[in-house]
Image (cartoon, rainbow, N blue to C red; front, top):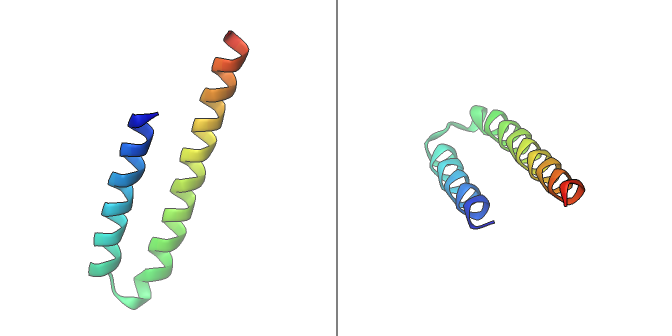
Length: 56
């Protein structure tokens, strides 16, 4: 659980730096890729949780 929080914080920092350095035209691209990444992380987390729940 701590590892997941660490991953999210690290990713958030990387995103903030990316947004600061990106141009206005790249903003939407970064936003879309960020949302896609969040979706992948959330789905992976849910799959791992359900797998652990069924294995118990």
